[in-house]
Length: 111
Image (tube, rainbow, N blue to C red; front, top):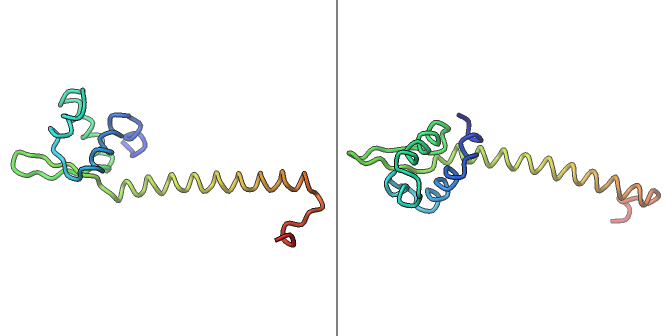
């Protein structure tokens, strides 16, 4: 599963927020913050791990989960790239509208 499919689920996004606030957390501690069953939380954690968004370390019988920052940084980069493209398009459209309203106005010399 890719990162976008994994974070599409609201419960999984809440798990990511919880991990960002607390650092390393056991599955039981995560489950305490949800009305879902521990089994459902474990399934969500498995999806997040498969997507590379969360890593797990075993300490005896305990399993500690934490964010896997490189994967989250990749998601962030993709979002930033999208907004950069959208804002560039918006700027071009605004320039075109301004040019239509003021056809004789030279923006370069007006600065």
